Structure formats: C-alpha cells, structure tokens
Length: 267
Ligand code: BTN
Picture (cartoon, rainbow, N blue to C red):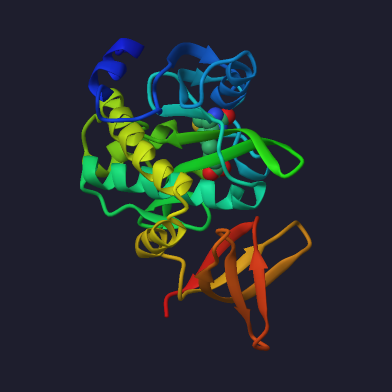
C-alpha cells in the first residue's frame, strides 16, 4: 500500500471526533467488514477503520460478490457502536451514502448521484456501494459495520465481462490516477460529520440531502424484492427510517426496506 495508518491519522487530526481513532491497514483480507466486526468484538473502539489493498471475498449487497483486485480501489469498513434502535439501520446506510457521495463530488468534481439505497453512480454506472452489517440484541444495535467500496483506479479492462457495462471507476472519468489516501481522508471526514448528525437524530437533514443527491425520487422504478417478486411504481419519498415509499399504479403505497431498484424512465 502506498500509505500508512499514520498518514491517514495525521491528516484527520482535529478534523474528526471518533471516526478513525484506530486505523488498521492490511494488505489482503477476505473482507474488511469481517475484520472490522472481529475487531469490535475484541474491544476496539467505535469508529475503528479497516482498510485493505485487496479482498479475497469482498461482499456486496444481497449476497453478491464485490470485485476487489489489489492496488486499485478503496475497500474500507468502519466499525461503530451506534446509539439508536435497529429500525434506523437503513438510515445508517443512507447516511453513509450521503457522506461518501459528497466526498466523491468534492474530491473529483464528478456529479456522482445516489440510487436507493446505497449505489453511487456516474452516468448510471456504478462507481461505489455500501454494505452495512449489524449485530442486534433485543431492541438495541450491539455493533454495526459500514463497508464502503469505491472503484477508484480500475481501467475498463479490469472489470469482468458480466459487470463491464454497468460499472465504472473514477479514473475512467477523470482520465488520471486518483490518490486513494487523500480520498479516504475525505470519506472519513465526511462520514464523521454525517454520523454525528444521525446520532443527534437530525434525520430530516440527512434524508433531505439524500433526496437532493439521488436520481431516484420522482422516477418510475422497478423494485426487485426477490427472484420472483417485483414491484413497479413511482419512487415518491424516503420515510423517517430510510425506507423507500413506492406509489403503485392502483394508488396504493408500499414501504420498501431492502431490494434492488431499476430506474425505468426519466419523468
Ligand atoms: C454493494 O453491493 O453495492 C455493496 C458493496 C460493498 C463493498 C465493500 S468493499 C469494503 C467492504 N468489505 C466488503 O466485503 N464489502 C464492503
């Protein structure tokens, strides 16, 4: 790796509260989410960050794999011990997506947009995603891991055939190599800020920002809930818990907390 935990810590000093107090950088892991979860279990503090140069079993949402070659991208997990009940789990993902999208926009000047709940897109192609995993106990979140994957310096030829038409990278858009270390610092600073808002229950502020950055609200969408179950409707809003409110053609409303959104046509 071309940077150390100390480099990142130095850049963060006095800019963050809890995020990045402990930073662990590893060359190769199965999944940074798994490592972050293990570290929390053995007593690492909330805000612990795990970064890897390569993942052997990178995890995506809905049981998918996340392509994680060495030297190219950001694979980063933040382990936290949140103070809110499990019903705000989806909102944690939305909060993290707002933070990452703003960091990406500021750092690259590319108008990255969000597709519900956690996809970061450039011209409708995926440049990043977030996988939140948590352990709950009764009505309490014991611990949560927010896993952030950003395609930074991949070239077109680095993407496997099955995703090359739907995925992209920052380098492809900027035409030059992007510093992973500097981008990580931006992501962690922004995450710290938005996570604090979430802890202070500033949910409206988070959802309003999410809506502003998203290309989803107001669009006709298809929601794939499972292999056999799909819904088509207008994505009307996001509720307090981060669920997508879908207006079906018969006028009824559905609240969706997990699934895949396919944008149908622009209004
Ligand atoms: C998605 O499917 O959109 C979510 C992708 C999340 C990938 C990141 S990479 C770092 C962290 N570790 C993992 O195994 N997954 C997440």
